Amino acid sequence: MMRVSGVAITVLADNRSACGLESEHGLSFWVQTANRTLLFDTGQGEAMPRNAMALGIDIGRADAIILSHGHYDHTGNLSVALERAGRAELLLHADALRTRYSIHASPKPIGMPPAAREAVRVAGDARRRWVTQPVELDVGVWLTGPVPRETSFENTGGPFYWDADGLEPDPILDDLSLCVRTNAGWVVCLGCCHAGVVNTLQHILRELGGTKILAVIGGMHLRHADSERLERTAAALEEYDIPYLYPCHCTGEAATAFLQERFPKAVQPVFAGLKISF
Image (cartoon, rainbow, N blue to C red; front, side, top):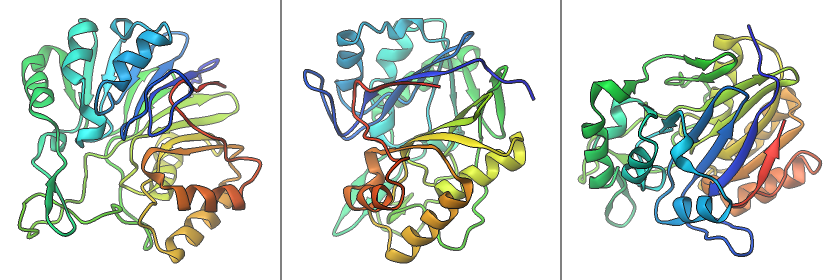
């Protein structure tokens, strides 16, 4: 399988930010290879477009806009992104449009905001591509498509449902990740990784090839994980021997601290404004 010569990732939105930039509960990455410029998720509020402007990034240059899944904190500003990047293709799974809830004491709507839903509709078949399997966007640049749920210890990470009464569990089958194959291994961008980070990495190596994961950046949705899940996740990551780990967004402070303790050389801080290259 062909590889890219390198990839650069800029964090446009995250729960933390560099001085002078905005933070929010949301996620957005600007991903560049020699041939492709990609906007991976669009955050929740105004952090993504404002931080992009502050960093000198023109989101109108995006070749493609990718939605990792259909939650509000990854799909805000989608209408703005599609309008500015008028030639960009939109890639997502059809389930991203479903009505969804998180139910703790009471149901909370967590699906796409109305403006984002309308933007997907207006994009139409000319700009919109439904992702149902692994998709190669360019040489060495892939979307995982839906990820099989195989491990016994991973779950979606929360009480997620399609209905406000909690009768229909939401498996979040639209969860997908972006991965770029460099000469040194795969660089993997996660949204929330509701499919589970171990499931996702297994899927990449089995379906797309290779034996090495070079870096993983993004949300791992471990903030509600019990000790068994954390331990077994760490054991699997240890087997993969990943040089660079960038947990952020929904990973959770306690889980991030746990990973930092287990992998002190690999785990790196993440914040809006961070720029990394491989």
